[in-house]
Image (cartoon, rainbow, N blue to C red; front, side, top):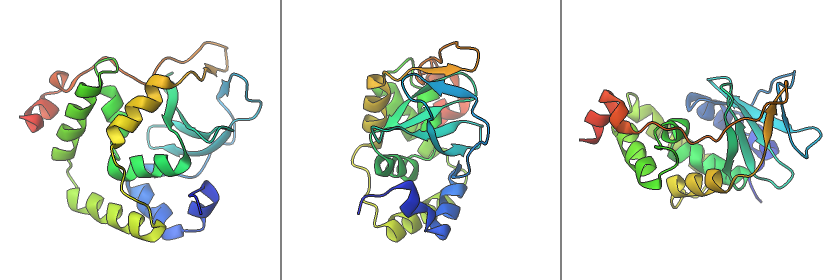
Length: 184
């Protein structure tokens, strides 16, 4: 059976573990964005920074940041869960992507993994989630994230009609002394 938000919602303990990885499956009551071509986007969750997770009719998972950035981040809900478990700092990988450079994203992922403050807790959450959901480990989560964002052609708009920009940000880990040192 494929992993869906409904299947996940039935797994309260797993939802709690995902919460420790900065994902909530509570949704905003009032929509603060629109998606071109979709009358009522289905928000399935959010993250700690106020961003929204949306399951599109195509089954792709869209991320809409509270800072005016948006894009597809996974080809399915299961791929999204694999991404969050493998790389809970996926949003930081995009922040330090140097404008969408896969090599920089891999560098960022390695540096972020090395800089984890709570590595034991994250690893325990990873094991619990994978075991409870019978979730296979992601083959190449950074590559899949890059592919999804790079191919994203979904247009998200603020309530004033202005379009959101890409999730790829211009920074690299070289802009962050902490990550630059973690990568060394």
